[in-house]
Length: 607
Image 1: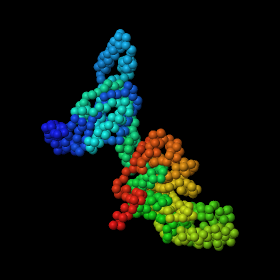
Image 2: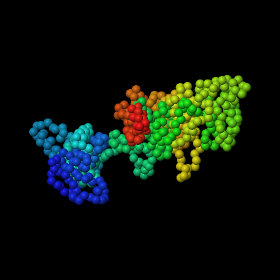
Image 3: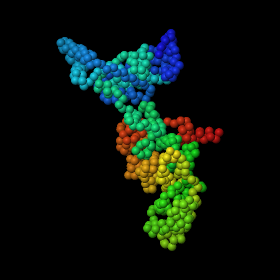
């Protein structure tokens, strides 16, 4: 590109293209103008300044440029490497050794004490000369330059100070390229041209340690591996401003756990993940104890089953829809044994259990439902019909069990079961809201919700074709510590975590009570069977348990203690990275649970 320099302006001079490019890459990426001043450049609408690394430590370790590469602002780091021929390197090294030896002898002849810096430099030069002679090392001329970008001049000054401080943390001395910022800017562009020419001689070992072998981001696919084509946006990495894009469906299993204290943004993060998975055709079922996902379901056209609300009925004797396996009726009878055990508080004694089994077979027979799949579309009997069969049984055990079930059929707890199922919980998003259930019905309501979810997951898989691809299902259990206290709920989570992958389903366990999850064998099994693990802000009382369970370093523990809402760690095996959830305005309006924002949103809807 040809440049012309117009006359100086009040602050410097403006460099513009003599003939503005009208096409090609340069016409797209080139700035409209560049204003040059002694202390910075104004490139388009932004500001830039170049720092030159002039001082280096005597010894460096691997990844010694990491503090600069991980600086959170916009920073262009350029490393220009020019190999020295062996003959030139040997000659220059010999001259340098002669200077050091002459300086040491001159001081000794005058009776001065030896300079420790000269002694160290002489020993290093001798060692390098030996390695160079054996071919174990080579010399390079290396220039290290940093171009800092900012939106305003004040922000640029602050950013340069931060970069110099980051460089000083590794004993690097960075100086501004005063009056040469234009040359510095072009030096850090991908043009392979060192316009500043301020190099430093390094050997192979020091140069190799400068390469960015460590990164705060997730590792990229290895050469030869297929590229990642799925996944959803989790957020951005605060350490590098990189995008955290994660595909749970390409991992060893599709499960995930989200552990955080109350108010850390765990439900907000899970809603974003659910919403972005819905974009890709994933079917989602949510167990929602606090009615937090209703706004999301209403927005995307999902189904909300509010157990405990007037008029909402669930019939536990319903047969699975679409399941035509010959043992459907048998498996339903076994589930009804579990339902009755939960209703009466414990497994019934053998006599009552035998009577219950006879009543189950009889009540389906009266409804005209047999093992023949063609009869499974007939209306299912109700719980009161089952109790009627028990009352008609002359055995004392049947009469006693019928009396114990009376409150659930004729008494205070009958509202949930005294009619056919009123809601059809099918669709791309089904939310089972348990907030309105009284404590006495919370366990049975949760069991019925989990049973329906498992029936959908356990449906026989159809042959996969282009027209009917395999359906991915995601099961979200919010506030899972409530389920871990219940035996049936804990067993469901364990069964889902172990068997979900074979059914192309993933389980997301969300909880704020880490001790209840990590303190039980079933809870630890659920966590260990989750390939994707998300840790948000933790309480000081729980950080030791979380750190020991996930092998966190001291820095990662401090990060989780001081994290803002939505910030945390994404862990998958040995790979881990920090991230912060981000959302659009529309997504935020759907996912937020802040009372003030919800009130403002309701007012806008009313207007």
